[in-house]
View 1 (tube, rainbow, N blue to C red):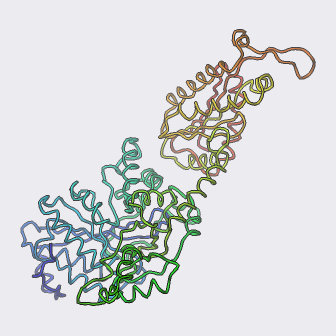
View 2: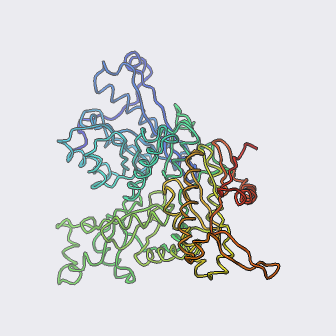
View 3: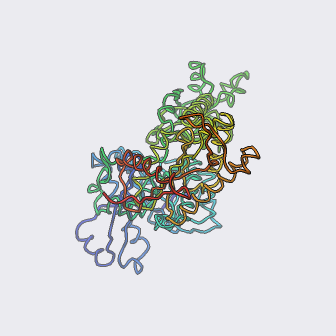
Amino acid sequence: MRVPTDARPIQRRDGAADAADATTVTATRRYNPLFDSQSGSLYAFEGWSSSDGACNQPQEMIHRSLLDGLMSALDALSTSPKLEAVRLLWPLDLSTMRTPGWPFEQTSERLRSAGIDPARLVFEVAGRGDTAELDQVLAFLAELRRDGHLIAIGAQLSYDLRLRLLHEQAPELARLAPFLVDGVEHDPKKRLLLTHAVRQLQGLGVKVWASGIQNDAALRICQDIGCDLVAGPALASPESEPARIPLRCGRTGEDQKMRRRDDTGPELVRSQLEQPPPLPVDAPMQQVFDWFREHVEHSYFPVLNAYGRPLGLLRERDIKRFTYSSYGRELLSNRALKKSLADFLTPCPTVDISASAELILEVYAASDQPPGVIVTKDWRYHGFLSQAALLQIIEQQKLATAREQNPLTGLPGNRQILAYIGETLEAVDCTRALAYFDFDHFKPFNDRYGFRHGDRVIQLFGELLRKGLPANSTFAGHIGGDDFFAGFHRIDETEVTGLIMQLLRDFECNAESLYEPEDRERGYIEAPARADLSTRRLPLLRCSAALMLIPAGVGKADQVETITRQMAMLKKRAKASPDGLATLSLEMP
């Protein structure tokens, strides 16, 4: 599908012409900011125009009104110094791409004449389109990408085209369905669907943005899930002029920054970056041969477009047959054959420098055994992670995980438990619960049967904790020895109490099997008293639980120490309780 050839240059009109058109078509232009969910900085502004009375006007006039809005926004990009790093996200309706009035070629020329990187104009593909013309649509989008523009997938795009775009065009951005974002703070099923959608798209190297975020609770969930970009009334209102858009989300600051979902190893990733020198895609083939000769330590090079964005890799093996043939170099250097560097490119997965190590490994695993992963910063080439570097990241991750886990149970240790408590106290949009578990009569059992049996008891409870609690809304940890921890999100008192009581019963029942038959039959063990040589009868093992309930709207991150002290005191009440459970509800300070 070609760019329309009958499009006319957009002319600046005088006031009389504007007034005449105002009687027929009145355009209302709004610009909605999109913020980076990690830093809170302005990433792009989404522009749209709505025209009153447009339904009765010629198609060309409607397009002219829409394009005036696009040109106005592009003017703001080129003239406002504070917007020099900001992108414009503009809707591209499939139903309008074939009609006169969309001068894309002139738009690209305007960007070039103003010295603006075309990547700062992102087209969001929207609409249903015609299934029979999918190939034409994809060809048209490929032309836009060759011009340097970025492509975003709209939420309402047809399913077939969405899949084809993901598979063939590797879009840079994707909008999440507004239905999933709306009310996600009250709907666990929406949160689950949102999580899967984000992970799937990010696994393909696509940045994800959530729009229409209405409140702090929904914002926090979108951040926790890992959305790359966020937008909506909870962050900032749309503006009629791009220059009025704030450069940073008003909710960020030194003491309240947007949180990352996963901060796993960003410094480790940076430390493993390699810097193979890139080649421009328009480099003559003779320069390519010289490049391999000058940099013999590299067997591949990233290939970039005119704006520094990676297009793929050039591997030495792909041109080796020309290198070692009698006239191979001369043939490739002959312009009459029309062979260029682009003919030898190999696709390579690309990730942003801010991506977690976990996400980078997922992106690599989803690819067809590439030599590594290209790393970008602000869409431009920043470095390369080879297969050896990725293996090193995996090994370091395993070591870091092992250091944090309890070696006996494999559960997270104290550092992760404290971090979880802090995050839980900040998540004031829902009800939460924290539980502290401690065995009763464990020392006499350990003295009687030995530490190996004691370890089996600890492993038994760790396994029950891992399997007996719902994985999608709980956190299980091992404080040390016979002390354990569990945290719960979006759960009411009745449900969490039932889960814990069942866990205590299961442990007591399973622990009995570790005793000798005569001790089980008696229901106690005999052990010497510490003060004298007399014999004491001590009950069989059980577990006590101190349960702290945290209602919605209650809690602050600086209350971690207070919470841990209160739970330690509550544990004493639990040990004195007949059923081994003591409960306390945290109140508003």
